[in-house]
Length: 254
Image (cartoon, rainbow, N blue to C red; front, side):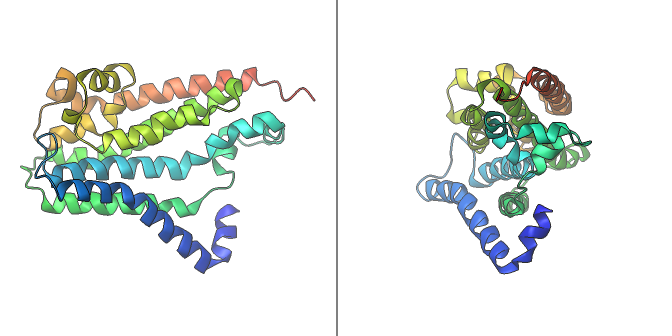
């Protein structure tokens, strides 16, 4: 319904899609400006940083397109409009995700994908079948991990009711963090996103294997292929958190 509504005004949709594409592209403009002054960033070349940027931006863009609307759950909890979704014969999470579905977010996906493709063209990588497999797997696994974090954040709002910014720290903040090589960050921070909140498996761990570099925080090289397991673990946690949140929901009481 929301897609049909959006496409009714095609020129308006084209303009919002273009504006989304350009606005999200400013992150990459920052990287361009940096490399206008330096030859490398933390020992990484421009093409390598572009590869990191492209993988995480595409993955986050897909997650934001599919589940970006779950951040509005807190408002529905506060005003009681979530009740209308509970009585429909459709999963509540699907309804929350589809609510005001924003097709313009394809701009972020397109922008990240273009940077990713460009980086693969300019990089001189010693390709093997495993590395070829890891490139699409990195994007898909990153999509799943970011999506699971969004669902956990939505579940948190059953109690916090206004905790969207907390989730954004891990989603938007995580996306920005992973656009840059781990070598420029403090060791404690890198270990935190590897072992504590393993967002590093979105792209750092598999992407560094593709680039022929050491895995972050002392992980073995084979850890690049553990990313799907981490994604499954994230979704198991997300599913549990969502079920607990739904069961604890008591409407507004009015």
